[in-house]
Length: 166
Image 1 (tube, rainbow, N blue to C red):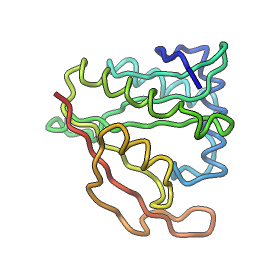
Image 2: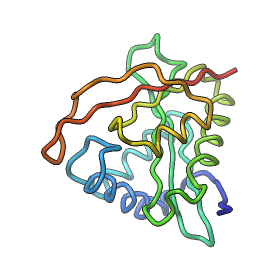
Image 3: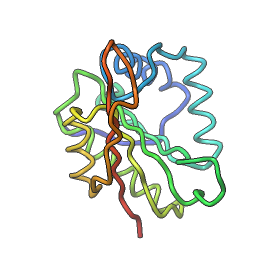
């Protein structure tokens, strides 16, 4: 599937919130258990953009099929050149070639912004799709934190992956 990747806009936030709510309620890619409101999602979007970090959407025919952004990895100043990526694809667009181009563009934008490392904290060690997309985009596995989250009545791991930038 061919998608257009562009900067997200405030008008995209309702669809972004809808995609994210699906992952909150039905998956382990995020450890949130209650979907944030549209206003919460707008605030999150505004904080990322105000920090000068990329927030992108993948769209086809005007419909947003996925989104990705880079946020600060940790608040301490020594981490200022490291970001954590987040990427979510609408259920109807999964396994259709949306994730990898979206993540690659995010990586390019992070490099252009002077970042040196991108860290992925992937919810659920069984999240093969996200792990595969990150591997395809040059990330390497750096560790697994076992049973660090409890969601939907089960213990969930996180997989840590990392990619250096030029």
